[in-house]
Amino acid sequence: MLQTFITNISRIDIDDPHNRRLCGEKLTGMHNKKAIRQSMGARLLLCRVLAEQYPAIPLPPEMIENQNGKPYLAQGGIFFNLSHSGDYAALVLSDEEAGIDIEKLEPPKIAVAKRFFSKPEYDWLARHPMNFYDLWVLKESYVKALGTGLATPLSSFSIVAGDEITLTGDNRGAFGFYLFNQPEGYRLAVCKRGA
Image: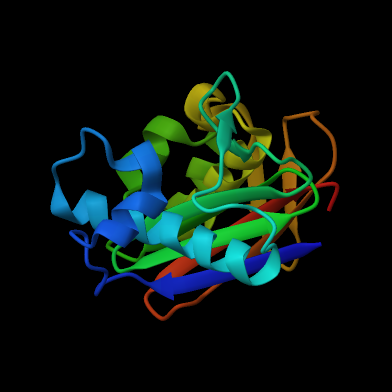
């Protein structure tokens, strides 16, 4: 099972007590309204989908975290991951470890690629700079599926995006990658263990 959900979060009422209750402690200590709206929007998307598809799970859902801070549903059996950028939040639900990343398209950040990507990726991007966000969301979705986040250096593996998306330089099992050009003006990638 692999399901992806995207929602516009630009109109979320960050002061609504019901919204705050559903987000639990996630918003504690946050002051930036944009960051609050994005985090709240992602968490509300998760709550909405869980209520629709898994009504036995109480809301807000009880969470546990791995050693790197990746959240899991305490009930187990369902894996999820959240991402947000600009006016959108994205969610992936799966029966295996999965990661998702969404990024609003902006001018390519080639200096970031030189610092964080593998040499083959950087060399490829020097010839194809408009593909920066394709690689960025694919790499982010992979480390999120691993559950390590940026504890796994982005330069320690390479992703080749063509007709097929392949991973080299990392032997942690089989993963499937999915790349989307939606919503308009964004890139979204999903990575799932076990393809």
